[in-house]
Every structure is written in C-alpha cells, then in structure tokens.
Image (cartoon, rainbow, N blue to C red; front, side):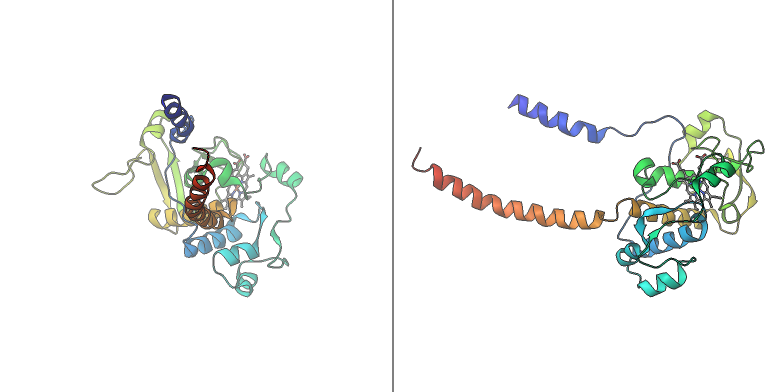
Length: 253
Ligand code: HEC
C-alpha cells in the first residue's frame, strides 16, 4: 500500500512543477478556445499584422472558419488577401532566405508557437517591446532580448521606454495594484500614446494569443469532448466488467 501511494505521488509530482525559467516574469492569461468571438478577432489581427512575415502553415483558413463559427465565404472575402482559397494552408510568399537577410533571423512559422513558448509568453512578448536606438529597428523586447522583429503594433500600443533594472522587471511585471487596478510596473513608461488605450491594447493581444493558442491545438476541444465520452463509457463498462469477473471466479473460490 505504501509503495502504491509513493508511486501515485511520484506520478503527479511533475504536474506541480511550474516553468520557472530565468528572465522576466510573464503575465498570466487563461486562453479559451470556446470564445469564438475572441478567436475571430485574433485571426483578424493575425492576417492583418502578422502574415506579412509569419506563416501558420499547419493550419487551414477553413479549419479556423469551421471551429470559430465563421462562414467560408466571409473568410474568403475578408480574411484572405492574396489569391489563396479558403481550403488552403495559411502560408505566405516571403522567402525565409530573404527574410533572414532583412531581419537577421527569418520570422518563424507560428502554427506551433503557443505550444513552444506558451500563451503567457506570447501575451507578454507582444506587449513588451520598448524603445532601444541601438537596435536596427529601434526596439528591443523584455522577454526576447535583441529580437529581430520590429514592433509591428507600435501605432496601436504607443512607444514604451524601459527604465527598469532587471530586478525591477522581474519583481513588478504582472503585479496589479489592488486599489487602482493599474500595473505596478511603473519603471516601464509610455512616452508616446498609441491609438488604443492600454486596456484595449491588452485585449487585442489577448485575442491574438487566444488565436495562436487555438491553432497550436485545433483539435483540443474535440479531444476534450471525446475524452469525456470515453470516461463515461469506461465508468459504465466497469460495472459490466466487474459483474463478468465475479461470474467467472464464482466457481473457483
Ligand atoms: C516585418 C516582419 C514581421 C512582422 C509583420 C511580424 N513579425 Fe514576428 N518576428 C519577425 C522576425 C524577423 C522574428 C524573429 C526574431 C528573432 O529571432 O530575432 C519574429 C519573431 C516572432 C516571435 C518569436 C518567435 C520565436 O522565436 O519563438 C513571435 C511570437 C512573433 N514574431 C509574433 C508575431 C506576431 C503575433 C505578429 C503580428 C502581430 C508578428 N510577429 C509580426 C518578423 C515579423
């Protein structure tokens, strides 16, 4: 019995380990693939602002349309800008070799980005660009030092300046003052306002991250639904299997 308990504890232990990496603390969000409106807005932001450089080649436009409840013809009309068809994968025409020359590193395909880095990382990354004249595109990033990507949403967010010491960044990121509801990370200041308020901008990035998390596992909702049925089936089957076992062993005991 003791061994059995130890085995159970060992089996669940890894679940409690959190991703305690170095670098800045990440802001936490709960992604929600059932929030179709959010996924739709996220896809809109993605095709408008990201697909110039990043593909999502393991996802088809049609699959997102189906999962997020959008009619195919509307997707074809409003969310596909090239001559692609709705049934095709979300590829782009920028060649990785050219892009590598322009940006230092080619922009990676983002289909599995949320699986690689996690939604919290993407959410924090997209909101953490700050002004840095020493970089080719004039920006640096708190969670991705010396990133090759320009801050493509700068006109929405505004320009941030980072006066934080590394400790301050680590401490204060993501902490919200319970009285004012404002971020306590005051060493990161906005020097030029964007078109959106900070709350509106966070919402845009939430939707975008929700979309990226969804395309990382488009089948997640199906798996969870089928998984529930399987567990219900196993629960009911248990009684029959148990009755059968009793029947077989009756004469032996
Ligand atoms: C002008 C081209 C360009 C646009 C537009 C662009 N990116 Fe990037 N992005 C890059 C480049 C280049 C890199 C690689 C940076 C590096 O490795 O230094 C990158 C890297 C990233 C990464 C990190 C990848 C990794 O290494 O894990 C993420 C996440 C990302 N981009 C998200 C986005 C999102 C979301 C958008 C749309 C809002 C977007 N990008 C728009 C060029 C672009």
